Structure formats: C-alpha cells, structure tokens
Image (cartoon, rainbow, N blue to C red; front, side, top):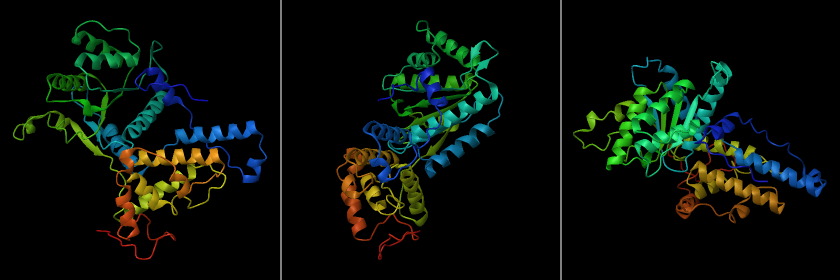
Length: 371
C-alpha cells in the first residue's frame, strides 16, 4: 500500500519526517521458510522489505564529512544576534544526495532540540526548531516570505513585503526557530532584478532572524552566487561570498586506493540493506562493484535507484538475489547511463577498477593510481 505523500515544506510534513521512528530491517528468512509462508504472509514480508528499502539512507563518507562540517560551523557560531552568522552552502551536482544530507542533518537538530527543550515554548506556542523551504524559478521576495509563513501555517498572504517579513520574523521568534534550510538556491538568478531582490531579502533575513541558514543548490559557485553576479573587479565587495561557506559533496571516484575503499564501504552498507533470501556477502560489494560504478558513474542517487529497482525485481520474480543479469533489465535515468560503455571499456582493459587491494575479486593487471 502506497504511503501518503507529505511535503517537507510544510510544518506537518517536516514534523512527521523528523519524528518518524527508525525503520528496522525485517528479519531475514531462509528459502525454505519463505516457501512455507502463505500467500498473504509472503506478500506482507515482501511489502516490509520494500518499505525498508524505500527509506534506506546510507551514511556515505561525503554525507558524514558534510555533516561534520555543518556541525562544527553551527555549534561554534555563538555570536550575539547583532552579528550575522555564517551559512553553510551545500554546492553539488544532482544525484549526489545533498538534499538528503541536509534533511537528515535538520532532522537530528529538530530531535535534539525537542528532546532538550520540549515541544512547546512557554506553554503557548509550538516549538519549531527547523524550517525548510525550496526556491523556484519565479520566487520573489514576497513569495519567499509567504513560503516561510506557509511552513508555519500562518494565514497571512496580504500586505507589503515588509509587513509579511515582520510576520515571518514573529513566527520564528515565537516558535524559537534555530535552523532554516533553503533548498534549490540555484534558481536564484542574479542577472535578473527579481533574483537580486531575493538575494537582498535573504541577506535581510540572515541579519534579522536568530537562526542559522543552510543553503542547498547545484553549481552555486559556477552561477556566481557567491559573487552576487558582480564583475571580477567588484566581487570583493560581495556580502554573500563572505557570509557563505561552500561545502562540496562530490560523486564517488575510484582513482586512488582510499577512494576505492570508500566506494566498497558504501556498497557493503547497501548490500546489508538488501533483505533478500539468497543474498550473500560480497554479492554487490565484490562481485558487482565495477558494474555498479559503470552503471551509476559513482552517483549515490543512481546507485540507490538501481539497487531498489533490482531488489524489487528480485523479490517479484522469486530469484531473491542481485545479479548482473537481473540488473541489465533495470532502466534508470539517462544521465546515469551516459558514461556506462566508456567506463566498462576502461574496466575491461584494466585501466580502471573499483576494487581495493584486499578484495579477492580484484583481477590481475588492474593498475593503481594513488597519486
């Protein structure tokens, strides 16, 4: 049964996400035990496993490094409110898990604050430690503020931009909001007047709100957002570049032994999440390491998509294991498949491989480049 859709850009959806208990993996069963289940029990077991896979989040090394950096910045930023706090900016390509990383981080902040301070502020207002919204291609200063009010559930829609901003600030103060996540910051076009106006609004919010802002986007630096669209001789005056700290989340690479070990560690975590009856150690991390890299180019989003659909097919057809033959029937995004044949050719020739030295599946002739 499909789960109801929730929006993380609304208080109710965010709170449901933040309070959702950790989903424990279903108990593995043997092939004979699976055969012995009734049709209804087998269907229920399949549904449990697929639900677990749909919520599975892997703490990749990239995610862990970004979390550590954000934690250091936020917890060391104990300035008075008359000073602007620095803001982490997750700047990365699509498909590397940047939004997931920030949402998970925000969830932990929400849980910690609610556990420590309680769900209410002074018995009058609901405590909302974290606000999360996303920009769009036609965001204006006023619509940005309305989005914040929508998150809180505040009814105000009319009035000047200054009046709406005042209402948003009142909500943040009454609900003691400490973290504001703004996703899709790349929609901010500083070559347009409305884009510059939204940028100025964000600076005002950072000045006025007693909260830390986290921004998430694609190609933020390349789009000139740190320089506010100014020319090379004017960029030194850009305020955002001095307030924002860029954090990267690159895709996986396999050029060095350390990178190959990080790739293998991630595949092992993924493998443990595959609750398949005929799964075995090394099914993905060793036997399909090169295959997964060629199919996904090292992007965690594509890796999870390939694994989830593959697991669904393995459960549905009764094969109950992940194989190359099965995954060859799985279609994923065109962007993920773009470099597949180039990477497979490099792996076949021995010029590129994803397995670290300790793997027994590593082929003779594989060349290392640990520079």
